[in-house]
Every structure is written in structure tokens, then in C-alpha cells.
Image (cartoon, rainbow, N blue to C red):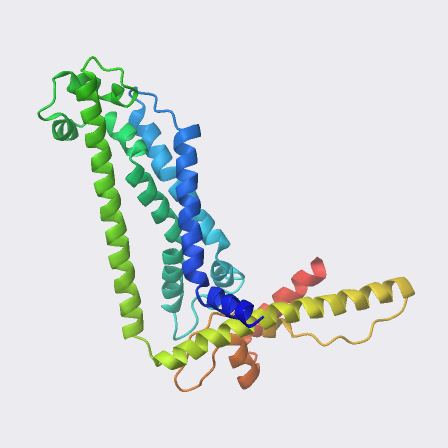
Length: 309
């Protein structure tokens, strides 16, 4: 049992690394599946569009999915049209762009993995570059090659050129080598940029290393207990309502947070040195809820909406 708890603790502590590793394996498998099953280079003037579509379209889809699946995105934008002050609070108007930048960086992980794996494989890039009409790129690719390269480069991927098989294979290897070089440049640039971002964030941190670790642990524990509490209260409330409905009687008072409390607890949190509140919920509980004019207006709008529903 102790060994099981040790393994479980290790997995929980390394869940970020494990998650990224699983994402990398999934990306690698998806790219190979696309290359073998779906991708068929047309070997015509459409090579550029076709190759770039397979190279960039999945990356764009993964970026959109990254925003969709990030809970902070919805915490940031939910209700912002009703109360724009939520994303641009007084004295913290730059907080929105900081959080949006964090969300964007997290969402870029999967697209960068896709582009890196696709470029290292070289199939999509080879097809796209073989259809280029740019004289500069043609000179770069066909320099020192037979003259047929200038006119039949788009047929290289299919091996249907009038060049010798050796020259055709040499061109394919050259295009794949360019793709792999770009792939490694992309990986190195992403790693270096990530290192700079983390170092800058830690350098600008207003809390110590140990307090930051405590903050992370508290946030994780609060998140888990909050989900359990949501489930518990939802079960109790639904049980009360169903019982009152079928027994045809008035319900007892059920304690619930006010609309303003829900709004206050849903705000994004930043640690303040003068007040050690480790989450928005912690701040709301410690300081209590004080309604300002904007909060009262938001509460009235939410109440009217609930009545209309």
C-alpha cells in the first residue's frame, strides 16, 4: 500500500511532465497517421497549398482547441460583456493581457509540437516546397541540379520527373533536410523562449520559492475540494427539490452564495504581499463581500436573467 501511495504521489507531482509527454506521443502518432493514410501529394501546381494546409491547418485547430479546453479562458471571458470591469478592473487593467498571454502560451504547446514533428518528418514541407514558383527558392533548391529541376520540381515527390532516379532522390533528400533543419530550429527557439519566459516570471515574482510551492499546493487542494463541494451541494439541492416536488410541499431554506458572491469568487486572482490571500475564494472569505454600484448592477442583471429562464 505504501508503494502504491508513493507511485501515486510521484505521478501527481509529475503530472505536467507526464501530460506533455503523452501529448507529444499523441502528436507523433497523429502526424504519422496523417502522412500514411490521408496525405497524398498531388504533384501539380497545387503542391504549395496542399502541403501548407496539412502543415498549418492542424496546428491552427490545436491552437483553437487549446483555448477552448483551458478553463482560465472561460473564467476570464464569462460575463465580460455584461460587466466589462471584470476583465479591466480599476488599478489592474493590465492584468487581462497578462492572463491572456499565459493562456496563449499554454495553448501554443500542442501546435508547436505538431509543427515540430511534421517538419522533422519532412513529408508536408517536401510537397509544399516542390510546388514553389519563386525564382529565389527555385535557385536555392535547383542550384547545381539538372535543368529539368526548374520545370519538373513539382513532380519530385511522386518520382515522375524525367531526371534520373538518383537525381530525383537527391532532391527529395535535400527538401527533407531543409524541413528537418527548420524543425530543429523551431524546437530550439521554443525551448529557449520558454526558458526566458519562466526565468523572467520567477525573477519578477513577489513571493519566495517556498511560499510559491505552498501557493500551488493550496490551489490544487482548494480546486479538488471545491469540485467535491459542488457535487455535494448539487446533490443535496436536487434531492430537496425533487422531494418537495413529489410531496407537494414548500421547500426549506437552502443556504447558497449570492450572485455577487459567485461573481467575486469567479474573478482571477493575483497574490498581494500586504494580504496573504492564496485564491480569490480565500480573499472573499477573509474580507467578506462588499457590494459596490457595479456589483449591484451585475447582481440585478443576473437575477433578472434567472427569472426569465
